[in-house]
Length: 359
Ligand code: HEM
Image (cartoon, rainbow, N blue to C red; front, side, top):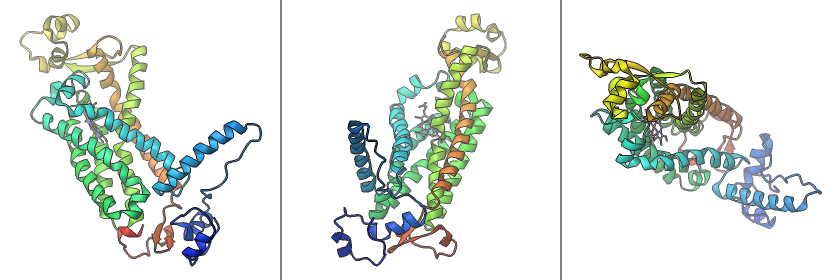
């Protein structure tokens, strides 16, 4: 970086022959004074491995160019976006198959459709699936700085669009949570807490739409909490294989749910004789089903029921800690551009409310 003064003219900037950087006049102030490393810092080079070095340099410069085009100021922001944004978009695209109703019936964990076909849950699960998948894909554009700085109107429209989809989508998911994975209390409570966290953060982000520093933090939380279900699924996948190996875990099922999955009354009576009691409605009899991933659909579903709540709580915990850590680590970089000046965090409380265009 060669230009340090905010008063440096465009002509002086051009005279340096440096690539055009719209933030150059104040970039040195923001990065150096605030202890951030120069984005253009040279990668240490080893004289022993010239071929690896040049390939690595090529990748690094592509990375830097893309990062610069998208408007990221910090070295690792693009990488973080690729990893976490990629996980969100990848998950949404992977689950997009569930937008086909027959797939929800056939491909959700065995026993789920027993409940989701009912009048309360059928519209809500589809509302949840459609709205969250679309919101999840579009949410990623909110994190591209170039859009925020150069096309603020697009950021605003897309932001409202995502929230209009996300909030009802999460409410739908939270209603379905009453019966998801057998309505097991562990997962029910996890879903309720998660749904409340997401809706609360989204509302706080909306209320602080003009205080961009606070807005950024609440919206980061909203999206991070929304992604906790992805981590929950991963945790549940690991846990279900572990408990299956251990072999001593069970989930409680109603006999009518078991009949719905096995579709064979004799098989149900043989495997779970309690279900064959005469004069008692199968909906009132509960039996323990062994959790095992390698036997049949029923036992596999039992392994999911036994582990999903725990996975959800682990996901919630990881995402809360992760996002608060990230917010604190990036506190210094979270500055506003007001004209040619980046506004420091200390100024926030004194600063008059400003239009979102300022950042
Ligand atoms: C971008 C985020 C999300 C997407 C794309 C998404 C998508 C889906 C999809 C496609 C299903 C159908 C079942 C399956 O595919 O396995 C589903 C199920 C469900 N989701 Fe979400 N979801 C998201 C976040 C959430 C959140 C934050 C909550 C809780 C507040 C939630 C609650 C539920 C519930 C309770 C079910 C039923 C569980 C099951 O039977 O599989 N989801 N979700």
